[in-house]
Length: 443
Length: 184
Image (cartoon, rainbow over all chains, first blue to last red):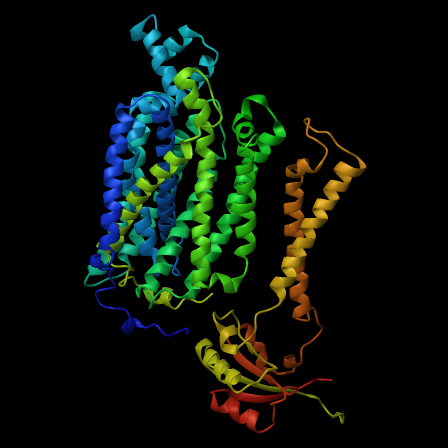
């Protein structure tokens, strides 16, 4: 019932998820992630050949999938602060906890720094390195080396040199981690410090809002260029100005799905019951619905311009994905990632139904799996085949098995760090001035 | 002085604040009235629950309005661009696989028809526009656009009675209770 929650209902020390409750799960996930990650690192660092190249793509796919979710968590935290929202204070800690997985995830991104992995993933890096090796004048630098070689795409590589060069790429890798990592760490710290503050006021809220106003720009730049560097860079000849927004749409949508799943499971286990209500399910369901539409709008806009303009140099991405069997996956995304959830999330009463939303959030995460698969994996056959024996293929048969293996390993890592974040602090900001407003929200 | 019998519209009662109005609305709802309404200068969150109003059928109208727009656009684009006068642009086929080219039109007409259905459906359900409303006969009711919170229970409600309804409004905290009569 509305108007039921008062400050008497909020525990003075807040609600905590005891470590003992999730210890087993954390041990299993942590164990799988640790063993799998170490084994994968050793394999990716020292192995050679087609299987290694295939696994490099699997690893990028799995890592990038969970990066999108963690970055989405940063986005919701920043948006909640910067828009001065009151409705979501009781789920804000979940947003912060999803977002704070981001800095930890860079552990899994380390293989992207191995030159022997980069060989398979990023053709432009290989071109740069070979051009430098073959250069007649060793000290003259990359531009002179590419110019001297004068190969088919070397003009393109020179034109893009200001952005696509080895030094800047690695510098950006570090800046992504430090920039957004600092923002989400600091925001979560501001929020967590409030929990134990003897005289909690609005000071931290204002601080968090001021910080988020520039933090959200850090987020936008990080997400956009991380997606450009790691995934769009798989084919250096192709470019899309919609790419960052496209990745962002799926990212915000699916981290909201994770937040919905967590809040429902926690309530089923007896936590959060005082402050999170079906009204929150409805609000979060509306955001999910909105981002389902946004994803469709953006991904179609990206496709539409290339499809209509039909300029040879620009269509490679979609020719690869809209022919042969990859076209089937494109169709699945149209109806499965947009059509079905659009119709299934329209109704208000269903969005207030916890079990239904649990199912829908899980379904959307599966669709996001296919969406990220559609971004990354079609590049694998051509790229790996080309590197191994100059014979580009469309498909590598054992690929999906490795994809699922990498997905499980990185996924277990994500769950481990997420549970670590959840258990280390209170489940909701119980001393936030707006916790009662949020608990009694009505929409 | 007119000798015609005036039609009684119902009782109007004023309440001090939004929260008093909210609590009073819950009691009127529990008393089982159907033809009554709350009036306030601004929207009050959760008041529709307190009044026990059922969900509007407007969303269903909008859904089917949007669906009509969707199919209108598909038919419009397909018939003109494929059936009657096949237009070849950028080497695109003139058949159903050109459907991505129609998406912007399908999107726009879905939005347009949904918007129109929302606006006109809403006006229809609210029976607007209208020339006058019986409550405008009450002088104090003018304050509803400023700082007045009112509940009006209509005489056509089956539970309405001249005595007990007035008593009910007084019991739940209503002030300045007034029997509003239709002006004509």
